Amino acid sequence: MLTTLAALYALVWPIPAITTGQQPPAALPSAVEAAPIPPMTETQKKALIIVMQDAACTGQRDVFLHAEQYKTAFSDNPHLLARFLNLFCQGFLLSPEFANLPPEVKASLERLASIAARINELFPTREQHRHEFARLSRDGQKEQDFLQQYCMQTAAIDWNRENTRNAARFRLYYAEFFTRPDIRRLISSKAYSTKKRQASLINRAFNDAQYRLRHEPPVPARATPQEQEAITRYIGRFYLAWSIALLEQPDAPITFTDLGTDALPQDLQEQISRDWKSGHPYSPKTSRLILEKTGLSMDEHLGLLGSKFACLLETMEPEAYRRLNLQPSDPDNIVSRLSLSVEQRKRLRNETSKLLLQDWRQNGIPSHL
Image (cartoon, rainbow, N blue to C red; front, top):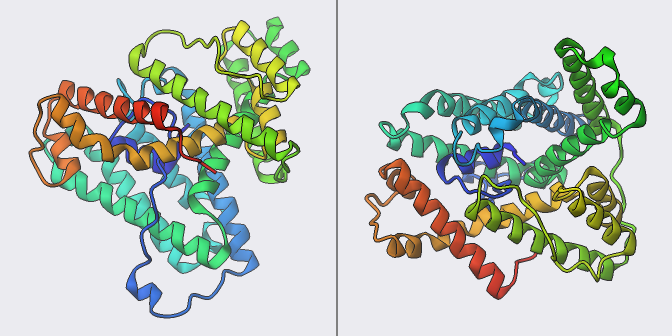
């Protein structure tokens, strides 16, 4: 699952896992800290929520329209991450509610969109422009940190988490559209055998997902605290198994046998069993059940876990360099990686990811909530 932060992080450190790439927020610039920041008005707060939703819809539409290519975006098609980042950030600016945002947020989003556009333009030759690419990546992260702090202080909105939620909910709603009996009947009819009709149906699914994202209220958690804990632990094991499988056999179908479902609510156990038997890691029905029981969908849980993973990944990089008998060529980690050959970067990425996954397997997975 991708958000702006995921794409920005993955462009400089792509990892074969489900990530959102949330980073620990930096402090607000001193100029902002110098004076009290007035809270957002209700109009501004509503506009911010809608602008973030519109950007998520813009980005996720592209992911679904080019699903096969995005499956290998982290490894074989990293240029798609640059395109995604650019589209996603343009989505903020193109939202009809953009004009109603606080001036500070508008200015930051405009800078972020400009950075994303330049990253997209520079990406094919990033090795030849690695210092500029590194600077752009860090400038983009600074804007993300500013938005995280500013939105939390003035509107109690967690910028990173809300972006993760929007992308996850859009994906769930889009998938659920195609499980509706009336839509399944349409798909199986001869009338929808043409590419034009299929494209029309996909567009309907996009519009339905965007409408639901805009209008459906948050879902309260219904499971007991013990059940919620069991579910989050299961999802942690799922994340580990999924990530390891992608590392070890990136082109092979991912199958699961036993991730320890005994402590889960009975209806969720049965649904997971049906998913595995049908060859699906998890289905929209499973994601919906998890949403109803924990207040977060499966993709939201996985995205937040990926955020933890991305935050900690660099801590394993020195050991990965040592194990591969490589030496950093520059004090700037991004410049150093881009100085390596494509094959060396891939080996370094995989080794660093393996080390962190091994650490989580041995010492436990940090809480993502």
